[in-house]
Image (cartoon, rainbow, N blue to C red; front, side, top):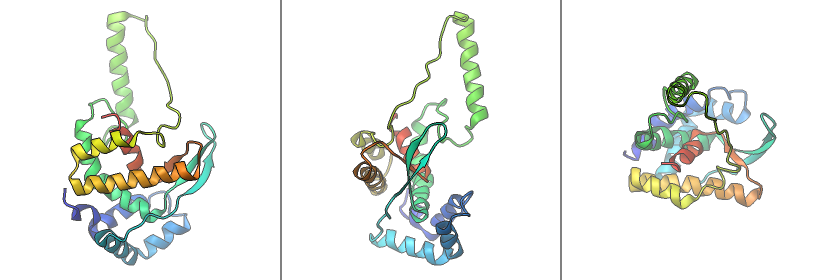
Length: 203
């Protein structure tokens, strides 16, 4: 994967179009999209010459299904992270995931997951009848408490050195920032990249 496939004007502009869906009511998104050519060129130039620096996170609370603090990523940073994920990380790491991993997978939405669950339940029933159980659990603070060295090894294994280094910088900046500003676990919000990093943790 060439670096230009991630930071070119075309790649970043396509990423912007994906990121704007559902958030065009936000002032920051409106500003970026209405000045798209200028903003995307500026972002490209910063990424190319090494002057790019992510902006500060902002926090807010969600209450469903439970109250938890969430860290928001700026729209500009989301554009870059989405391009990095879609053009490099996802295509490289997804191939190593098991078939039944439906998390953030293309063409593996709710219907696919339900179909696979039904298949497993039928296999279990034919072998064991109703003598079984389902374990439902949640890992508290999973995103901010990932062991970064494990994720970084996955990046180094599946990505080119330059792209792996770029992904490591995003991971370490975003979650070290969360932990530094907010001692209680907070989930970064606003891009698929952190979620796919968490999936990569399980590879």
